[in-house]
Amino acid sequence: MTIRQLILIGFMGTGKTTIGSAIAERTGWDQVDIDHQIAEAVGKEIREIFAEEGEDAFRALESQVLEHVLASPVSQIVTTGGGVVTRPCNVEIMKQRGLTVALTAEPETIIDRLRADTSRPLLAGDMERNVRRLMEERAGLYDFAPVRLSTDGKSVEEIVDELWAHPVFQRFLAEND
Ligand SMILES: Nc1ncnc2c1ncn2[C@@H]1O[C@H](COP(=O)(O)OP(=O)(O)O)[C@@H](O)[C@H]1O
Ligand SMILES: O=C(O)C1=C[C@@H](OP(=O)(O)O)[C@@H](O)[C@H](O)C1
Ligand SMILES: [Mg+2]
Image (cartoon, rainbow, N blue to C red; front, top):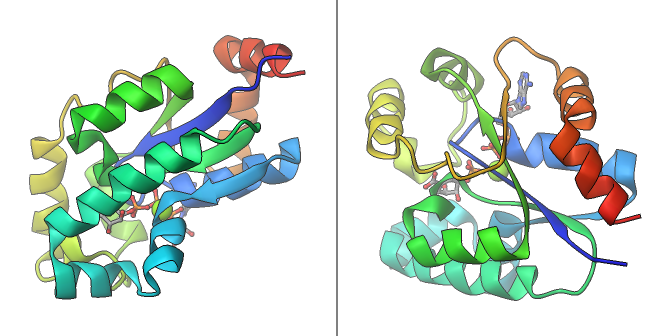
């Protein structure tokens, strides 16, 4: 049996953490959320790590935790933070260790979903402007994923159904049977 991991990537608010939980329920696999693991390891919220130690320190932790989690010899769903793709070493390890699925959404959808959110430090202040700026800065960085799913106007269940029907995902499931 080949053990491979399903890795969800995508911009903030595309629904990685939420969709990851729904896939975990359907597959019975564990979900490991990188942000959650970082917060647990450091004993601080993500926004506190950014405020007290800065983004570079957060990125270093993120790379360490990603490498550690993807080294586990188990089938699992790994949900990443939107900025994980900004480090080429993270992209390399994700390409090697599993099937990566990119969730996408239009900026308007993300702005709607995150309007009341205060947990994402990179969006603090003018959230709408920050979403558009960061999406432009990161354009193309999520494109290495062999599976891309648009989440605009879809329920969590519809997105999981669409993933299920995808031939690449079906092959992935068969290999992990
Ligand atoms: N398909 C969806 N439709 C509507 N709201 C969604 C959907 N997916 C996620 N959300 C909501 O968007 C917000 C961000 O979702 P989250 O899973 O934390 O995204 P990410 O981990 O990609 O940043 C949450 O409030 C979540 O409930
Ligand atoms: O895009 C980013 O740089 C970030 C995304 C966040 O995760 P989500 O994508 O789950 O919101 C979290 O890792 C941190 O706030 C930084
Ligand atoms: Mg998340």
